[in-house]
Length: 168
Image (cartoon, rainbow, N blue to C red):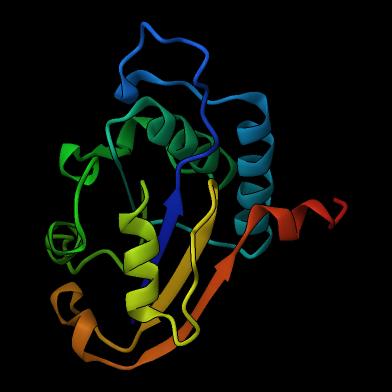
């Protein structure tokens, strides 16, 4: 069995016009929403075998918030420049290259690709995966490169706004 989590980066700042798009940091609202997602993952005993993140600052910061909460060493986060500005086919290439020794992977990245890949697996399509949004897909396979051809055991979306209503 393989479990794949897609997490869109948290809400980021547009307050620094001198920064490139890849350098934009998170804002406090994004950090809070990501903390809710991190808490959800920890409460549900999610353990990542591998975390892969876009190199963009906002994605990497988001990955580090989640990693800390689920006890994954942030220095083990794999940075993949191909996730930034990618399309669904290139994202599948990243996924298919994950070693089969890993059973649970979390990937941090960007829209529109993350909405597109969510809709590839979801029965009920979504218009947009929001910032800090999470998609989980569990596959009945032992090989990452077969996930598009096997049964999905479960598939769901968690939006931070849904968790904001829940008190710790």
